[in-house]
Image (cartoon, rainbow, N blue to C red; front, side):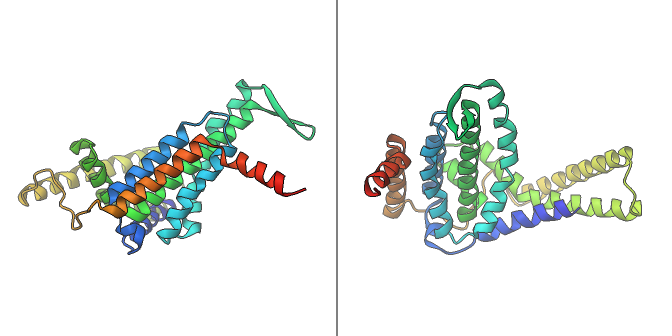
Length: 269
């Protein structure tokens, strides 16, 4: 039950961050979505053996988190959850790609380990950018921005419904698990009991969805969520998007880490 409660609290905290009033929060959601999507595309476009050239791209999530005043520990903690999954994918690479690229002292480093490190770095970059985007924008605003950028309305509505009623589902699951624990008297529940609990939760979700649907029809729902805040794509948004796109293009065309290494080598004797 602790994991369910922690999940709900984590989602609510992220939603609270999106209600802050900073310069990055006041930007139109479409500008932040476009910049984040461009960031993800550029990061994904690098060669599978690229690691050092990806490191300068950390400037994007770091700057956005700083402007949005998001706690570093919160962002790092949530991003760290994805690292084991990225490692689970990348750890197979050393088994199939055993060509030695260089030696670290007496230890040979194969291409598989480099591609594994590249996968982890990409996962951290993309996940942190997506998490910070939601933290400085809000999930409903992101869905609305995607719809205004061309996403099918049906898909945007499904994403918003999922987010809006995820808290309700988590609360129902928390109460059900708590009731099971009280009736188990500290013993581990049997598999049939757990299956019955899951079926009961599914049935309650089905009934609640039917009641919500009838309530929305009674309130003249026609397939639109009317946002309280209407965004305006002005000069600030244009400068925000153009500035980041220019930086991404430069970092993609030139290896900033290599240039920095050459510069340090010339300065230091």
